[in-house]
Length: 153
Image (cartoon, rainbow, N blue to C red; front, side, top):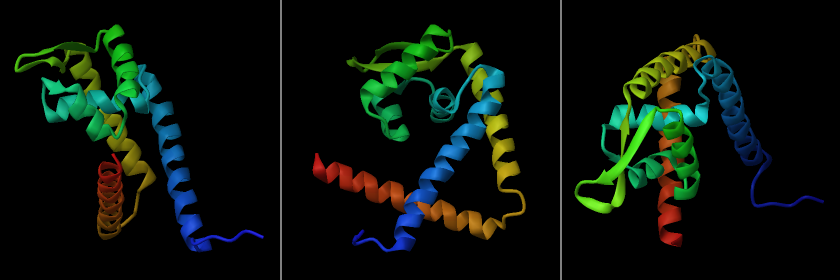
């Protein structure tokens, strides 16, 4: 017999959160493929575009919740496609700073429109109050997980 400290509702929440993330990625990948992007490759482009040119790789990894090695593979792919450039950080040569090419910036902006349209389509009719609650729950999960991760290191 299955016993757990989690109730069925807790288990369902975890499973539904995972499923929602997978379904979001599936829909995003389908739509972003028209730009020769995926959800995974769009995220660093979007963040660099929003957070500013010269963003450090480590900062980007933190914002994405990725380990450095996983991010490096994505950046290699984006750099190979001519969408970004990595340069030594002018204030710390050990660090790499990230810059979008004109094509990378253009794709980041196009991808943002695609993702906004996906969000609007998938959440059509959902009251803003409910979306604000979901945002608070996501923030709670992200902050608690970040704190737990920092204390275990």
